[in-house]
Length: 253
Image (cartoon, rainbow, N blue to C red):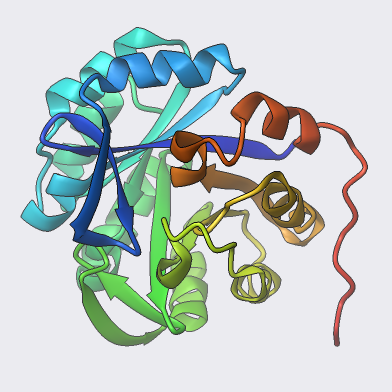
């Protein structure tokens, strides 16, 4: 398996936006045509797309389904989507629409019986999303803190049958100040299932640094604001992660 880059499309009011550290009050609109944005990333060579229904995250139900369907119809990229998925019917709606993976975040924290049943039913089609502030899980579009330790919660999701996780360091997300490599490495070392990293990527060197965690189980990286601000060129990043010259970090133990 190679290392996968996931350009991100975050949806709010039908537009492609990015948040700063998960704050809806710090929202930048980049396009009113998410399907065109999807075509842009496909043209650069991406094979996967990471979509988040931000409005759905706060509402607790899908709020941008028309935009999601437009994205699915725009390219042949595989899509994983999260935001407001609270029941099996929503998972089925997305899968029937053509989504490849559905992401559970808040519901994984608040409804253990649902997530266990969903993992048993949908298997590889589900991804557990963990956003953390200072090592503690955050929910409801990362607007609410919990007392759950992120690594301990990740291990509980792995035990429940999760096939892969997305892990976001919320403090670095959208800040263009670099990823929290230590947090990503700590999470990857704790797990035996694949991890998709997210948050803070600013430069090509950041992309390469995260990709170098591949031998630890980090199988991919979500990139958002850096693509929209032009600090990372997607085609160049895809080439760099296919170069085969990335080295694993030294085990500090």
